[in-house]
Image (cartoon, rainbow, N blue to C red; front, side, top):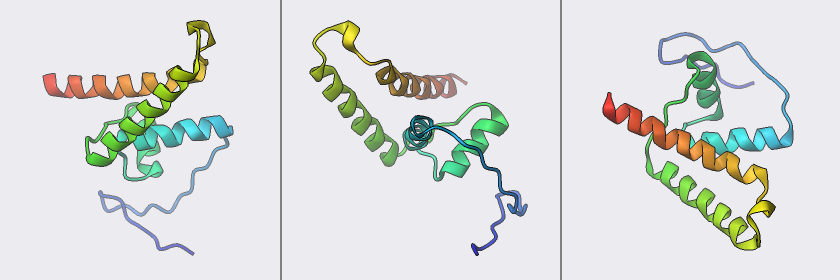
Length: 110
């Protein structure tokens, strides 16, 4: 059995919340966790659910994930001959990265 942990407000985290998702949804969640620089998937999901927003943490790992994701997108775009052949799923990580970059812009102006 795993060790019981307290959160940053000294509360026990002993409730389990689980949900089902498709493999594609799971992959998208994992991608968003990596791109936002969250420490854990739990941190990402709690922040997203409780605050209806996710605060991106700029760090070297986040930049590495951005670079890797952009390289995957570039590889896919090189493979495509016509714009109408671009798979819709390719736009999801682009939207995610734009949302993250926009959140940095908003935090800079506040």
